[in-house]
Image (cartoon, rainbow, N blue to C red):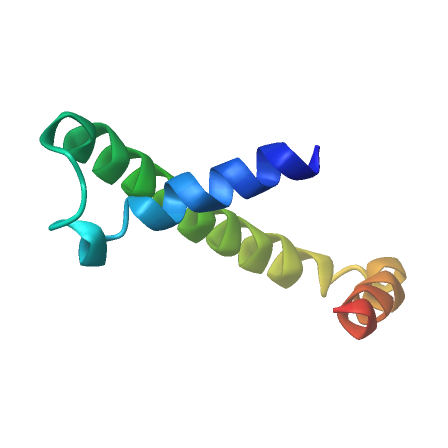
Length: 73
């Protein structure tokens, strides 16, 4: 499992625009697409968590759970 995460992080990092000069042309488009897809997913997840948090704050039972979750992070 750790190897898969390491590989995903390396591929994500290699798709960064800073590596444009070092990347072969055949890998350029797929890596940039992968990098954009991950960034879009992270942005969507962040937006969804904010929406869930806003709705959950109106439910008193979930406020305690959210506070515990916030303390963990």
